[in-house]
Amino acid sequence: MAILGSTGSIGRQCIAVVEGLPERFRVVALAAGGNIDELSGQVRRHSPSLVSVADAARADELAARLRGAGVALPEIQHGREGIRAVATLAAADIVVSAAVGVVGLEATYEAVRCGKQVALSNKEVLVAAGELVMKAVAESRCTLLPVDSEHNAIHQCMRGGQVSEVRRLVLTASGGPFRKTPLKSLSSVTPEQALAHPNWRMGNRITIDSATMMNKGFEVIEARWLFGMRPEQIEVVVHAQSMIHSMVEFQDGSVLAQLAPPDMRMPIQYALTCPERVASNEVALDWKKLKRLDFERASTRRFPCLRLAREALKAGGALPCALNAADEIAVAAFLDRRLPFLGIPEVIENVLARTPRMRLGKIDDVLAADAEARRMAREEVSRMAATAAAAS
Image 1: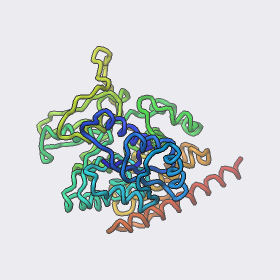
Image 2: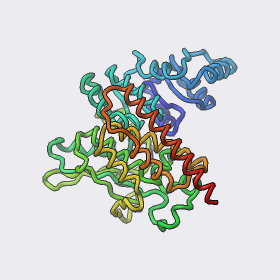
Image 3: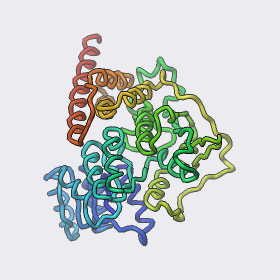
């Protein structure tokens, strides 16, 4: 197994799953960014043959840390070439794609082209380049399995029927921390409040994306590509308990739902062991405590990012890529307190309005569209900050 993004939230939980199944998996390569403390511990425990980090300075730091601990050095690479080397390592049968950003997109695309079994967590891959990636999946006969809990749930439910028998997919959303917050109060919410997710333990960006419900917008786009559905066949409902992770409604009216505690180790293990179901020691559902399951409409007035994602999917071309890039810049600005919470969808909408309607025919086109959208998003953040400063 090779793990892209091994020190992030999903990467660490993937390591935990692997360590619980030592007879099934061996880690042969790791790619991380700058968390050398976490990465050096992973290298000591798993002895991979290849490791990649963000840059040369961190590569030197990792090497020094391992030498100091008396650990045999793996091959250490860095940057875009390093993570691509991890993704395409011949010794890796499975590649876990949990590295965020376009560097993870490019590496995952290469893993797909090599015909690896890919456990996909990186949202950028299908949001920004869904058509290209799924074409490569078909050509290489790669096995692509979703780690994301909602798509993982749909994958499980769809084993109960044929794609042609599906009427619609229903993605569930917790609604995040602001599901019941008065709309007039959203303008003043803080990063600390937005990071306090009621159910899930995740990285900072996806937690903010949950608060804006952009994560669900991304999931609509991903579901369109993963399962070959038309956008109008993909519905989003708010389900505050986060026990039903998604549902599939078939043409005969039957609905299959997947239930599990909100713990990412379960979908990670499924993606790694499918089509088998391997015994797990993780917490099971306590049916005696599960008193009710509630559902409500996902309001695009409260969650405008959901509307923006659907509009980008409908337009196609470069717009889904721009959606993702602008969101990443806007979320970072919010976390840095340079942008108010309601500024996130405003930045994204302005970037989408400025993005040319063009088809992305190759990965270099995706990378160029991503870079241009980021540039425009930074401009929008600076403009809004200047306007706010002038008004204060």
